[in-house]
Length: 224
Image (cartoon, rainbow, N blue to C red; front, side, top):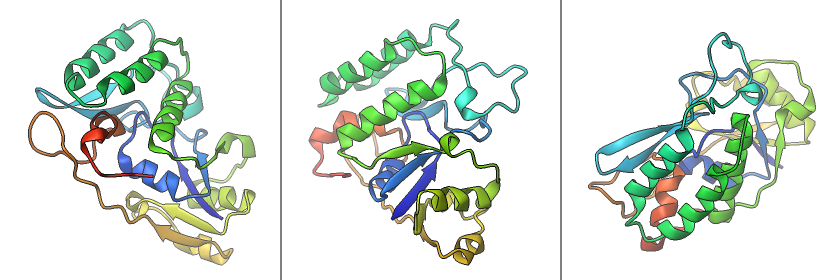
């Protein structure tokens, strides 16, 4: 049984969905500290003016140690309407704009207090569009108290996993020997970013999955 563990990011890049698809279970790492400059509340799209960051405003002041599952959206800002307008302007000429934008708008027009609830609805939408059917579970449901790499080991063991699939970004901190001690194999994701037709100039990789979904009809590429 192959397990992948990752934070519930906001409209993440294609590589994340590739790892989700190749696993038997995706454990949503929702009970670790929110990273203020991380990807849980922002990602990149391509616009007429170049690559631009979409950012969901969240409440941060005095909340330095809040967990991902606790992060609240700052709904005093008119961010939903502004983001939809930005997305519409950037992708209105994309081949799959009408379908993707209508589904996206349904989620944006709902009321959310917690960032994770918004992100999870977006992740479920995108995975469905990509044909990713791997089930998911939430780390917070396992009540595991360990930290760092040991925490990942404990989560994999909790679901009977024998293999852990991780991204190359973890090479700087993952302690592989902890997995080996308990007989869990560590596999590093091998993902070659697909090149597909984009709007607004030359190809840019590692954008939000939204870019690929908008352009998919012009591509022979299948992620799932």
